[in-house]
Length: 448
Ligand code: NDP
Ligand code: 2IT
Image (cartoon, rainbow, N blue to C red; front, side, top):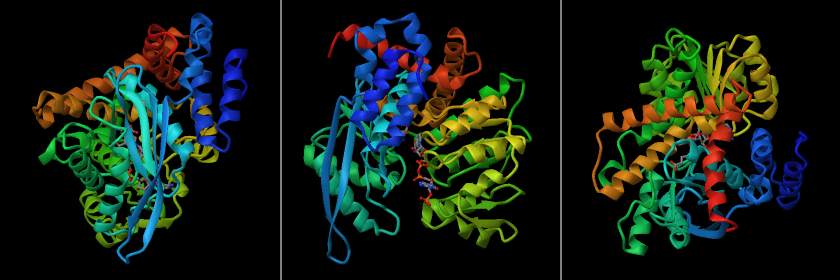
């Protein structure tokens, strides 16, 4: 993709040259710079005063060894990362991902996207992300605990309630956050809101667990309503079966839709009668088993090996909630030819650039990740507020704030898109609206 503005193209070229072998990071930057073309045309100072050039370079990257001992007594060594990307509008904020595919480029792409997503929430949080190539799958609780303690032994030097506040992402849920928080508290001898997604007995917020999936449905609902439509009576396909997918399924169902499919990295289940979510929660949240176990509970459902086949199931609404680049251009075209009306991204960057193009050119309503999955981090920011005030809001209070935030994100992104001559393009709208607040703050700081 060539950018029209030569200064933006030069920045893109430099990003590629300086970050070799990191295609996901290049992809994320390229999309944002493309969206910013009309912004820098109107506001050239974002280029001339170095804002865009600073924006694509992380403020700080921390990379460290994570040694731990497995149950057999063997020493294992993983790599840990924290990319503190941008603190213009608040302390670095973003999840930790534990997955064998993690390397610096994945954490950079996620940290970069987090800047704009966090800005869109309207709350004072900067962008960061971290993680490790550690795979929690198949590990005992004791192994996960030892890994988390080793990871936090290094990470605790670099984070803090007003500095950098990590949370969960793929492979990091309540169990991992508990071990990480316990170790931080022990080493630093302080009890502060340094992590979000905490358990409810030690400072967690009600509705944080549900927030990303619920928020995804709230914004999708708002997008549909703007077209005089709703979830009522719709057939929905959701990829993944982790935290985001499970609570997207719960909310979509409560809004009157029928969710017919879920997946994991091995394969997908198809249950045209509607997913039995209690069974999925038992399999995934309690037993940590594979999605194919679903057939034990619903023998009439089908299970198919391989995850991309899920996009061949005809549906009205598709909610990708697994991982980056999980919808190829071919899968997108298949969804379009099967009549999909709306796609909203629960995962980060799940649609390839070709897939986004296919959806947009077919007139499919498309809710990009930075807007659509911002409910998780927004509720993390609400958890930070509650921790600072040393009080707790009810589930209903948090859920209502989340709902309002998601509605605002949709309308702000839609307005930015039309203000810049791209009405209906929420990819551009989310990037522009997210950028402007960060960019204005960076201008105010001068070169720093
Ligand atoms: P979980 O670890 O709870 O679940 C991840 C799900 O995605 C699992 O079903 C997993 O299957 C599947 N998956 C992961 N990697 C792959 C892969 N390479 N190929 C196919 N399937 C895969 O993570 P979350 O639900 O928290 O995260 C899902 C997505 O949502 C991620 O993109 C994350 O960045 C994003 N997100 C999460 C937020 C949160 O609050 N948790 C907030 C905003 C975005 P398997 O078990 O087989 O690995
Ligand atoms: O991608 C994301 O926004 C998250 N994984 C949630 C981050 C957070 O700090 O709650």
